[in-house]
Amino acid sequence: MFKQAELSAEQLHRRKKIDHWIYVVGMHALLIIFSIIFVFPLFWMLSVSLQTQAEMMTTVGFWDQLIPNSWRFLNYVDVFHEIPFMRYFLNSAIVTVACLIGTIASSSVVAYAFSRLRWPGREAIFNIMLATIMLPSFVLIVPTFRMYSTLGLVDTWFPLILPSFLGGGATNVLLIQQFYKTVPQELSEAAKIDGAGHLKIWSTIMLPLCKPVIATVAIFTFLFTWNDFMNPLIYINDSNLYTLSLGIKAFQSQSGVEWGYLMAASVISMIPALLVFIFAQKYFVEGVKMTGLKS
Image (cartoon, rainbow, N blue to C red; front, side, top):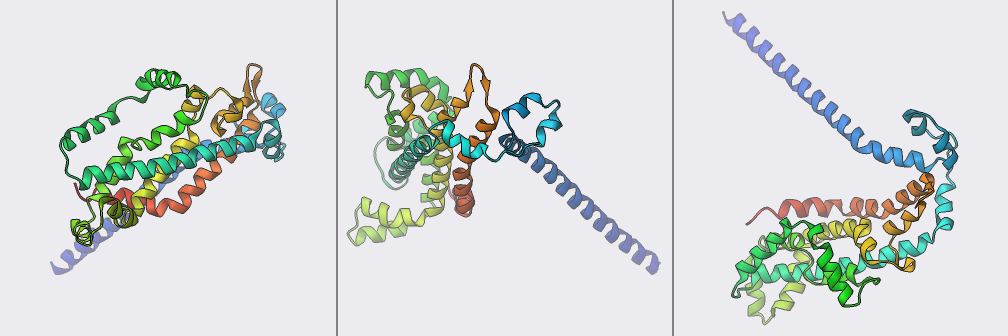
Protein backbone atom coordinates (compact mmCIF):
# COMPACT_ATOMS: atom_id res chain seq x y z
CA MET A 1 0.00 0.00 0.00
CA PHE A 2 2.88 2.34 0.91
CA LYS A 3 4.77 1.46 -2.27
CA GLN A 4 1.65 2.13 -4.38
CA ALA A 5 1.19 5.57 -2.81
CA GLU A 6 4.89 6.36 -3.34
CA LEU A 7 4.62 5.25 -6.98
CA SER A 8 1.54 7.40 -7.60
CA ALA A 9 3.28 10.44 -6.06
CA GLU A 10 6.28 9.88 -8.32
CA GLN A 11 4.01 9.58 -11.35
CA LEU A 12 2.22 12.79 -10.36
CA HIS A 13 5.54 14.63 -10.01
CA ARG A 14 6.69 13.30 -13.39
CA ARG A 15 3.40 14.36 -14.98
CA LYS A 16 3.73 17.88 -13.55
CA LYS A 17 7.28 18.08 -14.85
CA ILE A 18 6.15 17.00 -18.33
CA ASP A 19 3.29 19.53 -18.27
CA HIS A 20 5.73 22.25 -17.22
CA TRP A 21 8.07 21.47 -20.11
CA ILE A 22 5.18 21.35 -22.56
CA TYR A 23 4.09 24.79 -21.34
CA VAL A 24 7.63 26.21 -21.59
CA VAL A 25 8.21 24.79 -25.07
CA GLY A 26 4.79 25.96 -26.26
CA MET A 27 5.31 29.51 -24.95
CA HIS A 28 8.77 29.75 -26.49
CA ALA A 29 7.41 28.47 -29.81
CA LEU A 30 4.69 31.14 -29.77
CA LEU A 31 7.21 33.84 -28.88
CA ILE A 32 9.48 32.76 -31.73
CA ILE A 33 6.59 32.75 -34.20
CA PHE A 34 5.37 36.20 -33.18
CA SER A 35 8.94 37.53 -33.18
CA ILE A 36 9.40 36.34 -36.75
CA ILE A 37 6.10 37.96 -37.76
CA PHE A 38 7.16 41.32 -36.28
CA VAL A 39 10.76 41.19 -37.52
CA PHE A 40 9.91 40.02 -41.05
CA PRO A 41 8.88 43.48 -42.40
CA LEU A 42 12.20 44.88 -41.16
CA PHE A 43 14.07 42.04 -42.85
CA TRP A 44 12.14 42.64 -46.09
CA MET A 45 12.96 46.36 -45.93
CA LEU A 46 16.67 45.62 -45.50
CA SER A 47 16.55 43.16 -48.39
CA VAL A 48 14.86 45.60 -50.77
CA SER A 49 17.29 48.38 -49.76
CA LEU A 50 20.14 46.26 -51.19
CA GLN A 51 18.50 45.62 -54.58
CA THR A 52 18.62 47.57 -57.83
CA GLN A 53 15.50 48.97 -59.44
CA ALA A 54 15.98 46.63 -62.40
CA GLU A 55 16.14 43.63 -60.10
CA MET A 56 12.96 44.67 -58.35
CA MET A 57 11.16 44.97 -61.68
CA THR A 58 12.42 41.69 -63.19
CA THR A 59 12.25 39.27 -60.27
CA VAL A 60 9.24 36.96 -60.27
CA GLY A 61 7.74 35.61 -57.08
CA PHE A 62 7.89 36.69 -53.49
CA TRP A 63 10.87 34.58 -52.42
CA ASP A 64 12.96 35.78 -55.38
CA GLN A 65 12.49 39.35 -54.18
CA LEU A 66 13.32 38.44 -50.60
CA ILE A 67 16.97 37.53 -51.25
CA PRO A 68 19.00 40.14 -53.18
CA ASN A 69 21.06 39.01 -56.15
CA SER A 70 23.20 42.12 -56.54
CA TRP A 71 23.65 43.25 -52.89
CA ARG A 72 23.95 46.90 -53.92
CA PHE A 73 25.21 48.70 -50.81
CA LEU A 74 25.69 51.84 -52.89
CA ASN A 75 21.97 52.53 -52.46
CA TYR A 76 22.83 53.87 -48.99
CA VAL A 77 25.36 56.25 -50.53
CA ASP A 78 23.20 57.30 -53.47
CA VAL A 79 20.29 58.48 -51.31
CA PHE A 80 22.51 61.35 -50.11
CA HIS A 81 22.98 62.46 -53.74
CA GLU A 82 19.51 61.78 -55.14
CA ILE A 83 17.81 64.06 -52.60
CA PRO A 84 19.15 66.66 -50.08
CA PHE A 85 19.07 63.95 -47.42
CA MET A 86 21.28 65.71 -44.87
CA ARG A 87 19.13 68.85 -45.05
CA TYR A 88 15.99 66.81 -44.38
CA PHE A 89 17.79 64.96 -41.58
CA LEU A 90 18.85 68.24 -39.96
CA ASN A 91 15.33 69.66 -40.33
CA SER A 92 13.89 66.62 -38.57
CA ALA A 93 16.50 66.91 -35.83
CA ILE A 94 15.69 70.60 -35.22
CA VAL A 95 11.94 70.01 -35.10
CA THR A 96 12.31 66.92 -32.89
CA VAL A 97 14.64 68.58 -30.38
CA ALA A 98 12.36 71.64 -30.16
CA CYS A 99 9.32 69.41 -29.58
CA LEU A 100 11.21 67.42 -26.93
CA ILE A 101 12.10 70.56 -25.01
CA GLY A 102 8.60 71.98 -25.30
CA THR A 103 6.80 68.77 -24.40
CA ILE A 104 8.93 67.91 -21.37
CA ALA A 105 8.86 71.46 -20.00
CA SER A 106 5.19 72.22 -20.54
CA SER A 107 3.72 68.80 -19.69
CA SER A 108 5.75 68.57 -16.46
CA VAL A 109 4.63 72.05 -15.40
CA VAL A 110 0.97 71.31 -16.16
CA ALA A 111 1.22 67.96 -14.35
CA TYR A 112 2.70 69.73 -11.32
CA ALA A 113 -0.22 72.18 -11.31
CA PHE A 114 -2.73 69.31 -11.36
CA SER A 115 -0.98 67.17 -8.74
CA ARG A 116 0.45 69.67 -6.22
CA LEU A 117 -1.57 72.88 -6.45
CA ARG A 118 -5.10 73.51 -5.18
CA TRP A 119 -7.14 75.93 -7.30
CA PRO A 120 -10.83 76.36 -8.24
CA GLY A 121 -12.03 74.19 -11.09
CA ARG A 122 -8.99 71.94 -11.07
CA GLU A 123 -10.92 68.68 -11.26
CA ALA A 124 -13.27 69.93 -14.00
CA ILE A 125 -10.40 71.16 -16.17
CA PHE A 126 -8.49 67.91 -15.58
CA ASN A 127 -11.50 65.88 -16.71
CA ILE A 128 -11.87 68.05 -19.81
CA MET A 129 -8.21 67.47 -20.59
CA LEU A 130 -8.66 63.71 -20.23
CA ALA A 131 -11.66 63.84 -22.56
CA THR A 132 -9.43 65.18 -25.33
CA ILE A 133 -7.54 61.86 -25.34
CA MET A 134 -10.66 60.17 -26.73
CA LEU A 135 -11.06 62.77 -29.47
CA PRO A 136 -9.80 61.46 -32.86
CA SER A 137 -6.93 63.61 -34.12
CA PHE A 138 -8.27 63.81 -37.69
CA VAL A 139 -11.34 65.70 -36.41
CA LEU A 140 -9.12 68.68 -35.61
CA ILE A 141 -7.14 68.76 -38.86
CA VAL A 142 -9.35 71.27 -40.72
CA PRO A 143 -10.00 73.77 -37.86
CA THR A 144 -6.35 73.62 -36.79
CA PHE A 145 -5.16 74.26 -40.35
CA ARG A 146 -7.51 77.22 -40.71
CA MET A 147 -6.27 78.65 -37.42
CA TYR A 148 -2.61 78.45 -38.45
CA SER A 149 -3.47 79.73 -41.93
CA THR A 150 -5.22 82.77 -40.44
CA LEU A 151 -2.17 83.45 -38.28
CA GLY A 152 0.10 83.19 -41.33
CA LEU A 153 2.08 80.26 -39.89
CA VAL A 154 1.54 77.79 -42.74
CA ASP A 155 4.73 76.77 -44.55
CA THR A 156 6.76 77.25 -41.36
CA TRP A 157 7.79 74.91 -38.55
CA PHE A 158 5.56 76.69 -36.02
CA PRO A 159 2.55 74.37 -36.50
CA LEU A 160 4.86 71.41 -35.83
CA ILE A 161 6.61 72.85 -32.77
CA LEU A 162 4.18 75.28 -31.12
CA PRO A 163 1.68 72.68 -29.75
CA SER A 164 4.45 71.04 -27.70
CA PHE A 165 4.95 74.30 -25.77
CA LEU A 166 1.21 74.65 -25.04
CA GLY A 167 0.64 71.79 -22.62
CA GLY A 168 2.61 68.93 -24.09
CA GLY A 169 -0.35 66.64 -24.73
CA ALA A 170 -2.94 65.16 -22.37
CA THR A 171 -1.36 61.69 -22.37
CA ASN A 172 2.04 63.04 -21.34
CA VAL A 173 0.48 65.20 -18.63
CA LEU A 174 -1.39 62.19 -17.26
CA LEU A 175 1.76 60.03 -17.18
CA ILE A 176 3.81 62.64 -15.35
CA GLN A 177 0.97 63.55 -13.00
CA GLN A 178 0.58 59.93 -11.91
CA PHE A 179 4.31 59.73 -11.26
CA TYR A 180 4.26 62.98 -9.25
CA LYS A 181 1.73 61.35 -6.93
CA THR A 182 4.31 58.71 -5.97
CA VAL A 183 6.62 61.44 -4.62
CA PRO A 184 6.00 61.98 -0.88
CA GLN A 185 4.19 65.20 -0.08
CA GLU A 186 6.57 65.72 2.84
CA LEU A 187 9.40 66.63 0.46
CA SER A 188 7.42 69.55 -0.93
CA GLU A 189 6.33 70.65 2.53
CA ALA A 190 9.91 70.61 3.78
CA ALA A 191 11.04 72.67 0.81
CA LYS A 192 8.27 75.22 1.46
CA ILE A 193 9.41 75.53 5.07
CA ASP A 194 12.90 76.31 3.79
CA GLY A 195 11.44 79.11 1.68
CA ALA A 196 11.31 77.40 -1.72
CA GLY A 197 8.56 78.41 -4.13
CA HIS A 198 6.68 76.17 -6.53
CA LEU A 199 9.12 76.82 -9.37
CA LYS A 200 12.04 75.82 -7.15
CA ILE A 201 10.23 72.69 -5.94
CA TRP A 202 9.37 71.69 -9.49
CA SER A 203 12.87 72.20 -10.87
CA THR A 204 15.01 70.90 -8.00
CA ILE A 205 12.84 68.21 -6.41
CA MET A 206 10.15 66.90 -8.75
CA LEU A 207 12.06 66.77 -12.04
CA PRO A 208 15.19 65.01 -10.68
CA LEU A 209 13.03 62.39 -8.94
CA CYS A 210 10.94 61.79 -12.05
CA LYS A 211 13.68 60.91 -14.55
CA PRO A 212 12.06 57.56 -15.54
CA VAL A 213 8.72 59.08 -16.56
CA ILE A 214 10.47 62.03 -18.22
CA ALA A 215 12.47 59.51 -20.26
CA THR A 216 9.23 57.73 -21.17
CA VAL A 217 7.63 60.97 -22.36
CA ALA A 218 10.81 61.86 -24.23
CA ILE A 219 10.85 58.52 -26.06
CA PHE A 220 7.18 58.79 -27.04
CA THR A 221 7.67 62.38 -28.20
CA PHE A 222 10.81 61.55 -30.15
CA LEU A 223 9.24 58.59 -31.94
CA PHE A 224 6.09 60.51 -32.83
CA THR A 225 7.85 63.68 -33.99
CA TRP A 226 10.68 61.96 -35.86
CA ASN A 227 8.30 59.66 -37.74
CA ASP A 228 5.49 62.19 -38.17
CA PHE A 229 4.43 62.41 -41.79
CA MET A 230 0.92 63.86 -41.67
CA ASN A 231 1.64 67.22 -40.04
CA PRO A 232 4.60 68.15 -42.30
CA LEU A 233 2.53 67.08 -45.30
CA ILE A 234 -0.28 69.43 -44.27
CA TYR A 235 1.72 72.49 -43.25
CA ILE A 236 5.01 72.39 -45.19
CA ASN A 237 5.17 73.29 -48.89
CA ASP A 238 8.73 74.62 -49.15
CA SER A 239 11.08 71.72 -49.95
CA ASN A 240 13.84 73.44 -47.95
CA LEU A 241 11.75 72.91 -44.81
CA TYR A 242 10.88 69.25 -45.45
CA THR A 243 11.43 66.83 -42.60
CA LEU A 244 12.97 63.44 -43.30
CA SER A 245 9.70 61.50 -43.38
CA LEU A 246 8.32 63.92 -45.96
CA GLY A 247 11.56 64.31 -47.92
CA ILE A 248 12.02 60.62 -48.72
CA LYS A 249 8.62 60.68 -50.38
CA ALA A 250 10.55 62.16 -53.34
CA PHE A 251 11.43 58.59 -54.30
CA GLN A 252 7.74 58.08 -55.10
CA SER A 253 6.58 59.72 -58.33
CA GLN A 254 3.96 59.28 -61.03
CA SER A 255 6.40 57.21 -63.08
CA GLY A 256 6.93 54.72 -60.26
CA VAL A 257 8.67 54.07 -56.96
CA GLU A 258 12.43 53.73 -56.60
CA TRP A 259 12.18 50.98 -54.03
CA GLY A 260 15.88 50.50 -53.36
CA TYR A 261 16.48 54.17 -52.55
CA LEU A 262 13.21 54.46 -50.63
CA MET A 263 13.98 51.49 -48.38
CA ALA A 264 17.61 52.55 -47.89
CA ALA A 265 16.49 56.03 -46.82
CA SER A 266 13.89 54.46 -44.51
CA VAL A 267 16.52 52.27 -42.85
CA ILE A 268 18.82 55.25 -42.24
CA SER A 269 15.95 57.34 -40.86
CA MET A 270 15.05 54.51 -38.49
CA ILE A 271 18.51 54.37 -36.85
CA PRO A 272 18.12 57.40 -34.49
CA ALA A 273 14.81 56.07 -33.13
CA LEU A 274 16.35 52.64 -32.49
CA LEU A 275 19.36 54.16 -30.73
CA VAL A 276 17.16 56.33 -28.50
CA PHE A 277 15.02 53.38 -27.49
CA ILE A 278 17.99 51.05 -26.88
CA PHE A 279 19.83 53.48 -24.59
CA ALA A 280 16.71 54.70 -22.76
CA GLN A 281 14.67 51.49 -22.51
CA LYS A 282 15.57 51.00 -18.82
CA TYR A 283 14.01 54.35 -17.92
CA PHE A 284 11.13 53.66 -20.30
CA VAL A 285 10.15 50.38 -18.59
CA GLU A 286 10.62 51.85 -15.11
CA GLY A 287 8.54 54.91 -15.98
CA VAL A 288 5.64 52.85 -17.33
CA LYS A 289 5.67 50.65 -14.22
CA MET A 290 5.82 53.51 -11.73
CA THR A 291 3.03 55.60 -13.28
CA GLY A 292 0.37 53.16 -12.09
CA LEU A 293 1.53 52.69 -8.50
CA LYS A 294 -0.64 55.37 -6.92
CA SER A 295 -3.87 57.00 -8.02
